[in-house]
Image (tube, rainbow, N blue to C red):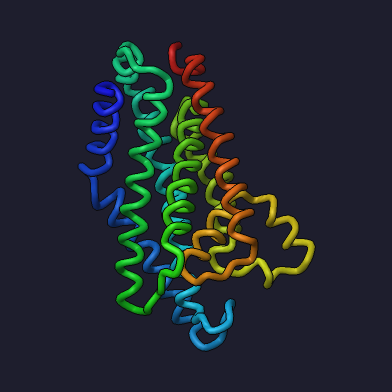
Length: 251
């Protein structure tokens, strides 16, 4: 496990050295979303019975921050290593493809969880958000951020330039995260758009994560957990396949 732990430690150092950029900035961004929407819709919107709209927003903003930061961590680290040329030293080491993927994904998940804790700590200064099912909270948090970290690994392998990676994030990850029920409930949508939204795997991450707080969800939590776990397995398997074959890594 020495090789895995060394690469994992290196990835942890990479984002912790720029803590204000990688952790503090996402927390502030989520807090600004919360303040803007809270001041705009306070007293005018109640998505779930008995739950203020501000409280409803907190789990969605937490998971959205986790999704975006998990993707950004693994993808940016890999593309930087490819462009600067230091990836060759990792590839020359006796690391297996599993250890390689686990180190990148694990560090990205740690960053995502730290950001989520920061968002929650900032949010409870304004409103109380209870936690009713902590097990579901942890499961969806880890699997959701892990899936996007693995997707970031795939994007980092595929991309050869920073603009390609930015395009992937801006035209795939960002729209999917904003259209996944962060600011609204699935039951509030018209029937057609409700069915379209069910295609988005990020919807089940946020809905299940919100269930961990309030004990209510638009989709049964067991169904959401199965879909999220399946998506995590699919993306992780793809990342592992690309790494093991050296796709766009060894040339």
